[in-house]
Length: 621
Image 1 (cartoon, one colour):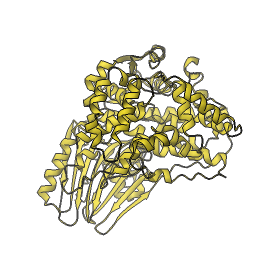
Image 2 (cartoon, one colour):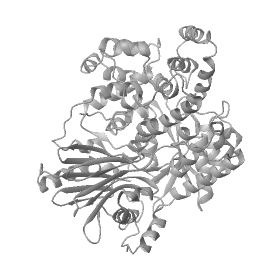
Image 3 (cartoon, rainbow, N blue to C red):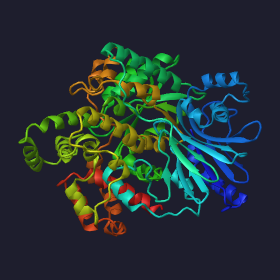
Image 4 (cartoon, rainbow, N blue to C red):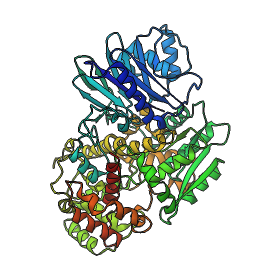
């Protein structure tokens, strides 16, 4: 993994020396992403920067990389897993290679195929490819959005970076905050689609590329999430095919010239990866786990059993409130855009500790989104049944009003309140409601003006005559296109790259994703059994206590800790003075929510944590 940056200045806003100075500052801002080396390239219009985390071909592979003729230059962040096969193809076309790096393979593929090379490469990446003769830039981002790409474009000036913080070194980029985007962040915990905290800065969406010329900027998609039907397939055939695809995805991601390990939570996804990776290695696999100091969040029993079964070289790190307080400011500083997912914190600590032992780690990201792993998929089943029983919604509302508040993991009162919140919706909008931090009544009390719906929310139609099949496709599309890209992968990228650790996600191999999206629903969600086909595929490889275990997210008891060890931090951050600086919020109402949560009169953990992250982030701007 690496950090990339660049300035293409067709109209001479900066001098060449100014551009070089800015890129050097951007490299410094991205040093954590690539601590091994840094460099830049500059010509009349283009300056590219790069910070390198050396994983493949440690001796060479420095970037930005120029072609032998000097016409083409590449700054690349990521890994190309099929680079050996693609290299053979390019050699057959007459290309010669001076390094063993995947960077040079990508450079030559782009020289030969242009943007069509995106359809040939298999990996996680973002890159900028400059042709100094035609004065054309090609930018690309991987299919699922594992590697970030932020950019600014105005009047012939195009600037980009792996993280927003690097772009803020450019004085001509306006820093006007996206007030509606911030409000929607407080509702959904993340910035979806192209949205960022700044009006002037955008994200390149996953599976898209940019072609920039002196006269035009064009954004196009080269890959989209598709749910087209395949031929009928039996459980047995599907489980065998899934196992083959996952095993191949794991093997590809074990290739590195540095030590590789695996995160192990004790759940089905990470246990499957440990099983398959252990079978492919000649030495014990290094595995890493976090033990949460809370009875309903701790998974030690399960991950210790898997580590023992597969004889891994296992390390467990404890995560206690005092550890959190020790590193909280440092961890939140790693977020160059607010992210309200509290699981970022244990992920950050896990990466901080794991990088002392390995430079690459496998993780289970993506399995829940492609195989229906979240409890919201089960809730969808119940919601579709409840509409036939008119008396149930009022009864559930009555039950909700008398239940005591609990901060246990996925407590019944929390699930019931979230469930009721989405009952009057359908498809993806229902799941958005379930993920929201505030219901409509709370929104009215907190926001001075109701936030405008995000563009991604408006993209989902909520037709009364929608078929169950179309609703399910919409739900999977939301989780894969928006929740995965905007939340899960941002969390993993920032948590890992802040420590110079590369995370690889075998479940997000695009061949595996395409296969999963062709499977019928009942092979993913069979009755109330989530990830059915993955459980079936691993049935003879993992203990029953893992394959039959229900989903437990990688979380922390943030609601409980905000009432106890983090109470002072919460009160100091969500002070009346700080809240009054947010023009779109009602400070008095939020103070009441904060105090009600501390006194356990209500559970506002999602909103309060998201707001805590936002205010902490704003203080640094």
